[in-house]
Length: 521
Image 1 (tube, rainbow, N blue to C red):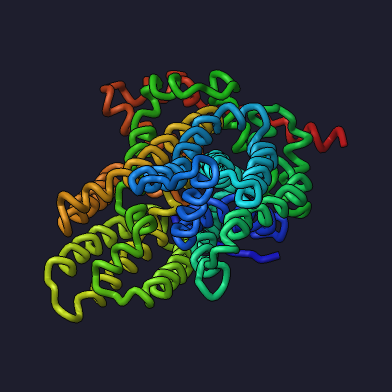
Image 2: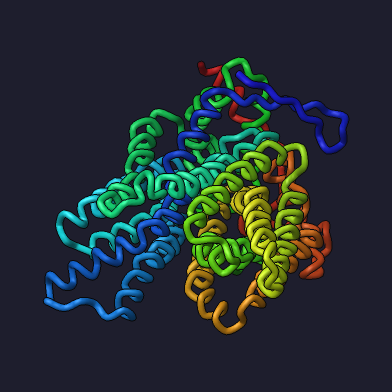
């Protein structure tokens, strides 16, 4: 068992957080089985693009005795790439419904079946001469990614002790970066970047999904879900004992904190998206989730991921070296993700978010400068700016928005918040992927100034509005925002504290059922 100690905000009380092996194991398992697949699917179609187009053309020739016109071929391949984002948006809209019915762990287990089906479809597509199987497979991987991108951080945020929530919440980010890096490495021409291997390259997503399907059912469901949603204190105690350890004296305090949250809810039912939008008691939390989720995709990172090769080519890098330069950027992603996860509990969420977006803004401005001034050494500056955007993103904006979505809301509101944030995230993802080529044609090097402006706007918003949530309970974070919500609607603070909103009401002291459970035992 690994132990870490932290001081509370006041500096007086020492809070010991235990990173047990079961807690670390489930974090790595869910991130490897779900989050890594998202990163892998982001980058895997870049290397075999020409081979996939050739397969589409050959199949069309076989069926209709004529080749596809170039515009139609480009459109068909674009559909193959962009359908991933369409599936992701659909998956994110299903999160609230699935979590309410199956729980976080159950949702992750069932969603792995989508990856297995998608892998089989793409793996056998060339044998069966079916481009439709590639497109459908990409669509199913998108649905899985839309679900897991929200549910994994939600699950880890609920099972983690508050002083380790940031560290565990950024583990999925590391695996997303590892997924991108793995796709880039395996796509090299010396490995699987060959015409005969592209179906296998696309279907490798089955391996992590199968590992998750085999082992995740053995781990408990989220204790917070079991207590607040299912009202099963016996299962809650068993789950907490599994994830902490049976000698942990803080288990009773954690259950009391959950029951305090439970008593504050006017209804234990998960609210809908429309109810969340109408609930002005959480208005600033919702606005913050919207801003950071849209901002992380409109920051330009998707343009970098989707069109890295084109950017490097325009920068003057020799074509034979571009694939290796791209792999190098993938390695930087992994290192930056590790730095973010290892420092978040020391530095805090807010500095990583503000610093990451600010650094991305400077790097976007740098790309514009490097493309405008055509001097021999400027392509090195362009590569450095691309690396800066990726590093700034992976240190903070890649994972903190999903972590903060879990932290800014209590149990009844959390699934709906993830649904809204996830849907806007994927919609922005699709928008950038579709619009960027046209923006680049019309604005040239100046297109990156748009991303620069978005990054700085989000950084300023985070500096002004979003508080630091490190080492705080979900109820403490809700109470921090209650001042902003009270000021927005000119409610007296004592009225706000006494009034029961839809999910955020008065906190009453009462005895817990924890002692009763152990007395019965």
